[in-house]
Image (cartoon, rainbow, N blue to C red; front, top):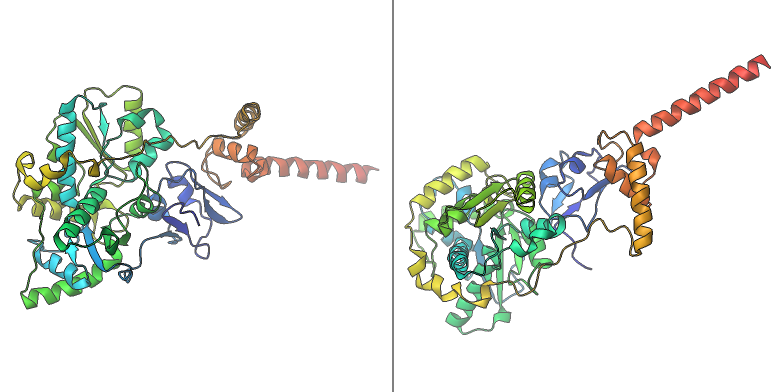
Length: 437
């Protein structure tokens, strides 16, 4: 079965309330026959529906927590926002020991991958090859959003894979060299703040295959880590991490952190999917100029605001800042581990991004034109209130669904009301005529 997206619908819990269709930025959800339905070609896995559903009918698909038996060796990549989920975490030693106790053989921080990405971006800006502004692909939703709604900005997407993917590739490279083992025997697992990471490994953009082999939801693993951290504190034993991240890498969990690590003044750090869409539209229309870097996150606050986290995002943000400030600010331009990979093809995309057509009505151009004309006529005849009661997010999308044969005009409650009023008047007139006769 072809993997589509990381959010599924539990039809037993779905009440057809339409909250999800109003929250979806790409109009990828419909409510038909009383149940929500996701349109695969429109979904970008932003997770807004996960937050919006009051009945918890939207399910994030991730790797089961007990799924560590597929490989001989297992590496974990903790998200930079993981550290901020724990109160009074002054250093990462106890957390790392808990991860080892969980069953992982090695740890490579996503934050370290972010430091490699930051230095690679700085070098890229100086190379003269960059198409400014460069849009970071650290948030997995952003390249899907650009290829879906802003295809003119595809050339602006960063040539470097996300910090997560960088971390996975470098981790396997270093572990296999150290242990003298084959890559096929090593699994790499990411502790994630959002379900979009799952889609990124099952159906990646810009690469043939992701080196991340599984994604654990942070809220699923939190309780077990808390228990193991308590044991590690009492035992006093600690195992080290070969390439620990510094302040710059840890700071990337919060929006603006990557820009600070890159060191450019000409950047735009924007969070929240609708804010991101507004800024991308302004860039597309050439209203925002002199920018070198666009650091965008679908979640408010950055990764500390992910839908699969345990802690309040504002509390997490403050903890992240405190922890990052307690770490050394390494000079990335002189960091030997960072410099080892900055110019490596290992951290780059190897396939071009392709635009995704979500408005294609028909393969036949003539038929598509006729459908478009009919769609415009239907749209003008609808009330234009975009109430969502019909099960489509707007009157225009209802018109599109009608010409596609997936809805009818009477799905609009206002059209249905008018039709019922006319029928009622006709029945009254008929009854009156029969009485006179």
